[in-house]
Length: 185
Length: 262
Image 1 (spheres, rainbow over the protein chains, first blue to last red):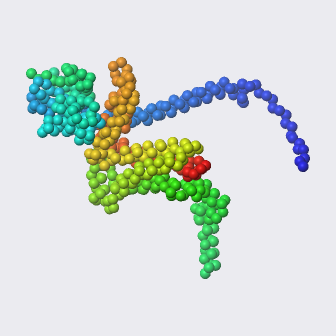
Image 2 (image 1 turned 120 degrees about the vertical axis):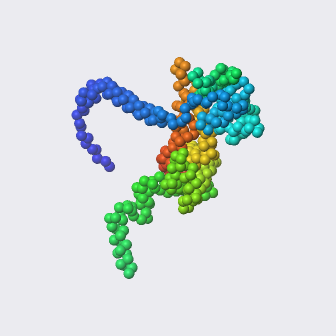
Image 3 (image 1 turned 90 degrees about the vertical axis):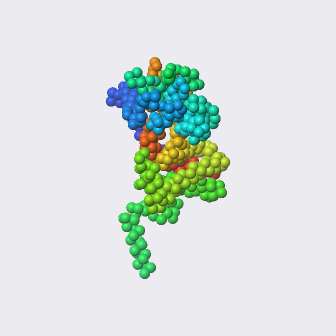
């Protein structure tokens, strides 16, 4: 059997005006300062993340330049020349009337093909893609021909100038572009 | 003799030093067992009690446990390998040869390599078992998601570790693999819609700032890629994986123990 307990009757507190929370802090000022705080926090976090991401991209690359002088055209014999392959990853090819620079990067998955003189073709060791001397593919899994790099004759000393960053793609009809080859006279 | 021994035992067990290490005492009651498990940061990942079916090899295959064991083996052997291996173009390959020829227990690298292969296999077996027993269903869906992330991290550990021997196989495999990053939509140089990001004539995504570049630290697999993969392989990914494994084990407990009906 429970005995009725006496409840302490407290005087109910004086109701505050609804917009005043405590010590003069209003709903409006709370929202304002919370907004400022959160925007500031988000901005600082965003800046920190951006700086972290930017940190992964160095300002100086210790890689060979993409543009280089490839010597005098007369030093090249007919056929495929491999003298720049290991440094700049490019072949200089000379045929009867033109010279062009083929990028030594298989268009299948990016390995470096080999020039097989005896079989007169480029052959990729990774998955067996094959290309003619022109760079056009004819066997293996590759979907498109090798890319050609920009090639020109230097105005001051007549040397070949090759830029491997500028590419000319056969499938886009760019091999006839005047900078995709050098005309031999 | 017996009494003296008992008194000695008593003095050891009741010493401050002993009690500071073994805080609960011999867990001979249910209450003490619970306290022992909950009061220990490692043990609390595990349930206080395990269902009989939970330790049945024919049911669980212990594939997750074997995977974790292999992770520990790989962490330990990897740590040992780090004492000899230098992740630079100059030294990486010869250090790998030296690990075999000039270092006692020259099989340490092989243990690491075969352990890595085995871990990938056991992860798949574990996932297969979890799938076939329906252990991915609610309330264990969240833990399945954690597990899938752990699978990806395991594969990334394999991928980054594959470059470190710095032989022809490694370089060209990573060349082929990292070219996939170049096909990322928008932020990969060869990816769809990458050409859309430009201001006037200037392309914003180039071969020196796309997703593959961030991965390799260069435009091709070179010194930058070797160092980045090394750091990711030895520090970055293992840290994330260890954290997620702790969550994974803890969720197993929270979601009603290993497999079986909830």
